[in-house]
Amino acid sequence: MPTAICGVCRVDLNRTDKVILCASWCQTYFHTKCVKVSDDEVKFINSKKNFNWFCDPCAIHESHSLRNILTNINKVTMNWDRVMESQHEKLMNHEKLLKDTLDQVNTQNVSISKDLAQVLQTQSEVKLTYADKLKQKTYDPVIIVKPKDANQPSKQTFTTLKENIDPITREVTGMKTLRRGTIVVECKNKEAAAKLKEEAETKLGSDYILSLPKQKMPKIKIVGLNDKIGSTQMKEMILAQNQFLDEAAYINVVHITEDKRNPNRYLAYAEVDGNSYRKILSEQKLNIGWDRCRIYDAVTTRRCYKCNGFGHKATDCSKTTTCPKCAGDHDLASCKASDAEIKCSNCANAVEKLKMKLDVQHPAWSVDCPVYKKRLDQERSRIDFLGHPQH
Image (cartoon, rainbow, N blue to C red; front, side, top):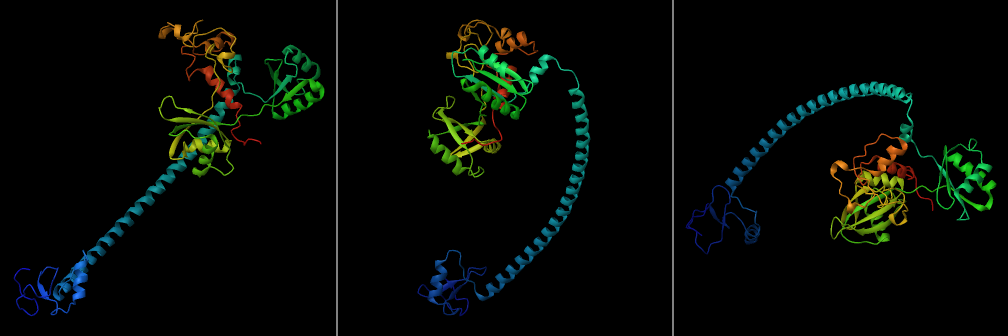
C-alpha cells in the first residue's frame, strides 16, 4: 500500500491498518472504522470481481452521473420512437401503394385469362392431323383379358371377345395384344371398364381371367444416406423424424443400393401415397437418422439396352441389336459415328411409321428424347397421385 492518509481522520496509514479504497474518481484510502465498514463487508467486496465501494462524496457524484445517463437514454428512446413512427407511416403508404398495384395486376390477369380462353377455344377448333392426335392421345382405363390356356393365340381371344361383347355399347376405344393370348381393351372411362369386366365375366365363362390393372403408387428417390439401413427401420425413421407427414402416411422402401456417383453413400427408392408424395417433393428433403437426404421424383420406365425400346429388358428382347447413338445395327462399343451422324432409333421409327415430325438428332438415351418423354407420360398415367394403397 502506498504512503497515504485516511480520507476521514487525515492520519497516516500504515501496513497494519485495516483500510478500504474508494473505487471512484478520488481513489482515496480510508480506515474501515472511519467509514464504518466491517471486516465481513470488506471481505465480501474483495471477493466480488465487479463489486466496488464508493466513499460518500463519490457515491453522490456517481448517482448524478447515473441520472445523466438515464436522462440521455430517455432522450434517445424518445427520438427512436419518433423515427419508428415516421417509418411506420412510410410502410403504411408503401403497403397502400402495393395493394393498389396488386388490384391493377389482378384486373389485368382477369382480362388476360379471358383473352387466353378465347385463343384456346379457337385453337381447339382447328382440325388436327393424325400425328397431332397421336401426340395428344390420353390413356383410357383398360380391362385385361387373359386366357387360362397360356398357349392360346391372341387372335382366338379377340374372336371370343368379338362374338360376345358389343364395342359400341361398352364404349371400347382401343385394343392391344400381348403375349400368351392376352388382350388389353381400352374403354372411355372407369365406369365403362367396370361394366365391360362384369359383362365379360358372365359371357366368357371360366376360361378367361379378367382384371382391372391396379394403379401404381408414386415413387421417390432418396439420395445422401451415409449408412445402409433396413427397409423397415428406414420407414420408421421417416415417419418419426418428419413431422409434416401424416400418421397414416404410406411408405414402402422397395430398394436400397450403393450410390455409384458418391462412394460410401447409399440411395433408396420408396413408394408413397399421393398425399405424402406431394408433401415430400414440396419439402425436397427428408430426415433419416442423422442424415438430411435430398429427394427426387422417381417416375421411370423400363428400357431395353439391346434394341433401345421400352417395356422390357435386354435379356427378354427378341429384336436385333440397335446402336443407341446412331441407330445402326451394331452395339454402342462398335459405333464409329460422328456427332453429325447421331440418330435416335426410337424417334426415327416414329417418323417412319407414324409420320410424326420429330427431331431425331440425339442419342436414344437422351432425357430430352420426345419418345422417351411420351413413355414417361404413359407411366405417369398409370400412377395414382391422389389416392392411398388399398390393403
